[in-house]
Length: 316
Image (cartoon, rainbow, N blue to C red; front, top):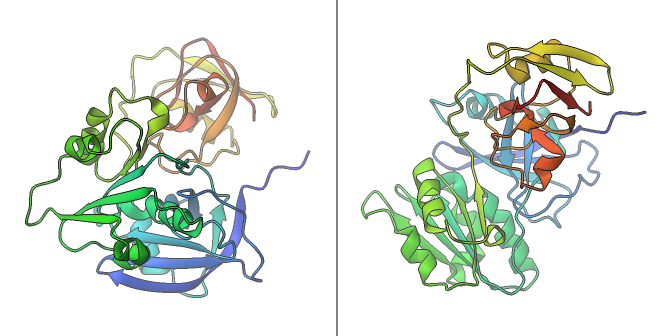
């Protein structure tokens, strides 16, 4: 059986710096073929160098299927991905990217309330562009930044139509997310992406909301503490027939690496979805922020997973 396609080859066709420390890149097929489709707010993995894989949101509208547009803020204290993008990628650079995954399920009738902090606006850019392209005006963006917003031009039409509310936290207090959400009643759908403190405030403000009305996008993995007292278990790869004993000091990802399993790990924090894998026997211990309870019955994010039994069988 042929392996499913996991990456496509692209080339950087445009690079600019709309704000200090933020690079915007356009990726396209080398022969100008259509790229795999994506949903509003979807993201892709960039396969950079020496196993470095990082996830970024797509910012263009999904109907614009001959390019992928991303915006990357250089994080001096990050894990190296953003620095590589800023220092190494230029027009003409060949770049492997994953198939797009994830995305935002916006609401047809209810108001879509997007709440962003700084560069956290990126997953909402394509959603707003998609809504506008469909002639829908049922959205509002509340955008907090320390100083001027980094990418105002990417939602210029939304600004012009009065759908964007800005908060400059360098000169005013951080907005109350509870107060923002309260004004839109019990039918609105809310989406949030930003620093951890903003996400925590959003979670608190929407704690009683049904899951289908709220959505969080994380770009910083939450702290994941390894359980050094976890019981060892046997990892079995059903398709390759390989197996190994997983001990706490190795962990599931380390065991998969030893077995040379075909699994891509990007965030290593259970937030991006790149390592989503089907499981057959377990059950696994889920520590991710991606899968729904129903999805967890058959799938697991291996980068932060453990096992509650003596064997974990993955469908790889």
